[in-house]
Image: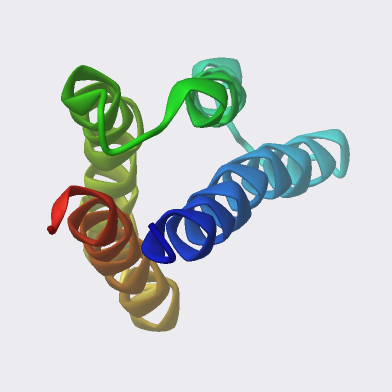
Length: 112
């Protein structure tokens, strides 16, 4: 299935972006900005869970696809809502693109 490698790359990039977000928020916190530790932990945990799920991701395992959506989707939706409320519209658009990418990658894996 040629779509699986592309979907894995998309999801791996997304998982990496979650860890990058955690790093950037940690940097902001160390620089004196108010960033709750639970937000940093949320990015780390969801990024790591997504990375681990990548190992088992395949068209023959729909439960892993569901788990991937449940691991990555809600946190990205939370980020979208938070960024839109904070009027960080450019970042909110990136969050929206992340949600689209999650859906697109899972669709690529699940389509026959």
